[in-house]
Length: 250
Length: 314
Image (cartoon, rainbow over all chains, first blue to last red; front, side):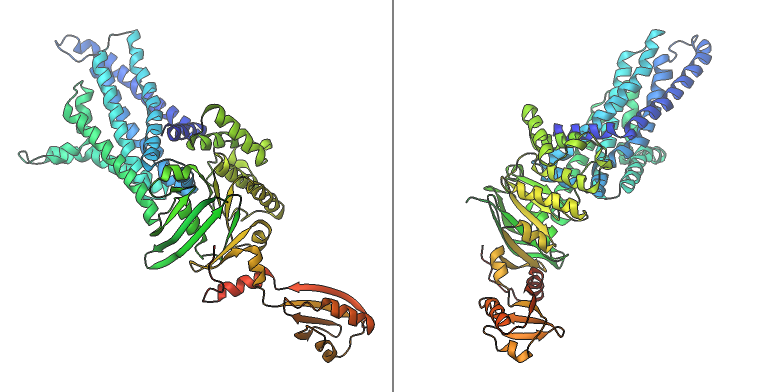
């Protein structure tokens, strides 16, 4: 399992793809980070008089991480499309299949590999809010919970992406499908919000955003944690089934 | 000799189409089995099944005593596989790639290093080991693919058309490499190139339309010859009838005024007779070439025939 993860990570970092992605995401988020700081510096004077006014954490870090979630939603499909669709096209999957590894080891290995890559991305993102410590106090607990939430969110993106990648032999189709699914799950909340109140709102429960938002404000709800855990597990299990089934039907 | 790979009654259907039906395969230690058939006969399907990439609809596969279906990990550890398209990662260098392959096959630490070093030397990859696989020529890529299949020192190595798309020199090198490998591993070689089988294999299995048409040693395949012939050139030829009446000659064809083809049964060789007559009767023999039914003819005969010519005997 770990050797598959290691293979995945080294393949990622040996192509310029991973580096460019890390750099561009960092650049985009740095720009947003700076504009949030600027905005905060402008209104700081006015809101400081109000008791219980939002501080640096609410005004800069929360929106930054919210933006980061959206950016990661955009790039995750391009990483996960490599998982199986690319291997199929490259004819390199037999290497893993003929190795003494089970399907779950292959899938989990790939998943962990990508998770490792995004962990690095998250560390890079976390450095920006942490740099605020030089000039201001921030709510480290809220920040920590938000980062944890972002991590769970990315873990869900990857699980869904890997599954969709195993369905097709065209990487681009895998990427587009992943993006559409994730985006749908992101905005499904909007429809839920406008639904007539009193109905059982299962659409809201499906929303990734709906489960991420509370974590941004520092809440850890067991319902959110179990949602993300279920989400990842379902997609990973489906990928394992799919890989096993490919042997039977190919 | 111990049997390293044994497959029984392998069948595989794609929807209503039969890809492979009731194929039995046995490979002993140190043996090269040639798996021969025209394109689309089910060679690759069989190779995929033997390597665990495709589950058979019926039948069993045992590799070094482990059942591929119920003990896949132990069985696959004994197996090296080079598919038709070598499973390479173009962005890795040769040495990095082989290290990952060894790691996937559970080699660690010192063992891994020495295994990779050995395989690089054996496959002649020393000069290119630090180059990216994507930049290598097809021949070196194919060698890297072979290296990948044998890095963990498996009992059985399966090659699916290892020489396709290579130039003659590369083909020769790869063949030499495969012959060398057979000293330590059992090799199954699928190919549609006859001379390759003739050069490399100890035993041949010919399949056509998913069924085994012939399975025996190469020697037995040669004995399948129906006729043999001699081509002679005589400067002062006699009448055709005179040639016809020579001992052991079954028919004579005149190719041109001076050239004749003399057809005989393989067991009754008229050569000596012919030369003696030619000398004593001053026919002025200029050329005598032994024309055997080529393997090609036998092959065509076998796969065209609807019923299997030879009983399947392993």
